[in-house]
Structures are given as structure tokens and as C-alpha cells.
Length: 239
Image 1 (tube, rainbow, N blue to C red):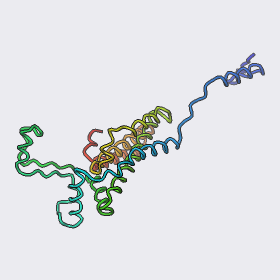
Image 2: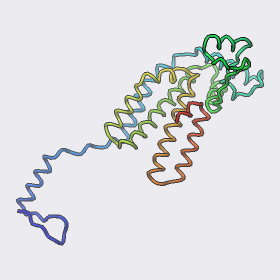
Image 3: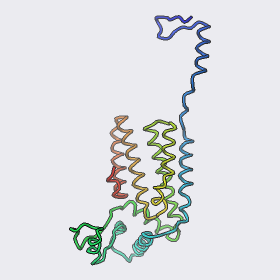
Image 4: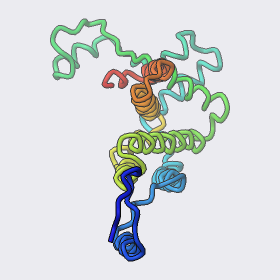
């Protein structure tokens, strides 16, 4: 029989009752173990394995324009500013043709020029051509490392939302294996997408933590991170 002591909130058990309780505890399912640092290692290795084949992709399309622009900038042959690398020069007569074909609206000015302000992304490309201009492999390696960092930040954010659970782990695994990330990872010129995503997710994660803890310093840090995302590309406007 179980007896209750009114001075204590917990029951005092007799021997028979205690053995019954022990047997019941053995039959109860174990609580799921939280996933620790090993899960971060798993996500990092998987993301790296998925992205590593891009090391041999070489340069293509916009990469050649950017290569010419930055090499001329480093040699002092240009005087337009290295941060303007993502500007698209349009020759006279091109804009009316684009309007006629429906690529631009009818009210577009004939002198229209296309330019993206992405100074932080350009700085990473500037570093490429300043240190290893003849090695596309090292340029791609920078993309690979950024992708690994992005997947780890995404996993850390999922753990904030879902806890250290299987759900968070599987969500991060599916994110790392998503083939929609192929272009951003394998194309050097698309590095801005990786940088923007990295700073956006990190900003949201820090902001979420600041709301939970009521910490204004973290809120300012989140604002700084989203500012870096905007310096990476205009894609941060979606956040």
C-alpha cells in the first residue's frame, strides 16, 4: 500500500509499492536523447560532400566578365570603382530592343543602366583575384566553405525552433541536400546568394534569441547582421 505524508508533496512508499513503481518505470519508454555536437559534424560533412564536386566546375558565363573587370581594376586600367563589378553596361540601342521583346516595360528610359550594389560580395571576389587569380578551384572552395557555414547556421536555427530533436536534424539534412542550391554553390559569380542567405538566417536566429531573452544587445547584433546581408545583395530585401 502507498501512504501519503501530508507534510510532504510526494508519497511515501512501502516496499511492495516501491517495487511496483520501479517495474512501471522500466516499462515506460525512454525520453529521446538530444542531438549534440556530433549532429553539427554530420551536417557539416554532408554539406561539404555535396558541394565538393563543384571545385572542378571552372569559370563560366559571368565569371569571365568579373575576371576581366577585377584584373583590370587591380592593374589600374579601370577607374570606375571595384564595388561596381555587378553593373551591367548596356550599349546604346539595346534598351529599345529589350523593351520591344518585353524584357523591360514600355516606359523604360533609353539611357537605362542596370547596376547591383553588392560591395561585400565584390570584396570576396576581389580577394580571389588579388591572392589566387589563376586558381578557380580556390574560388570555388570559398563557395563550398560558405555553403557549409550556411547549413550549420540553418541547423542551429532549427534547433532554436524545434529543440535538439530529430525534426531539426532531418530538416537541416533536407536543406543541405536541396538541389535548388546547386547554382549558388557551383557558380563563383553567384556567391552573393550564399553570403546573403548566411547573414539573413544568422540575423533571424540572433533576433529570435533576443526576443526570448529580452536582450537589446542581441537585437542590435541582429540589425548589424541584416545590414551585412544587404551589403551582400539586394536579395536581403525579402527578409
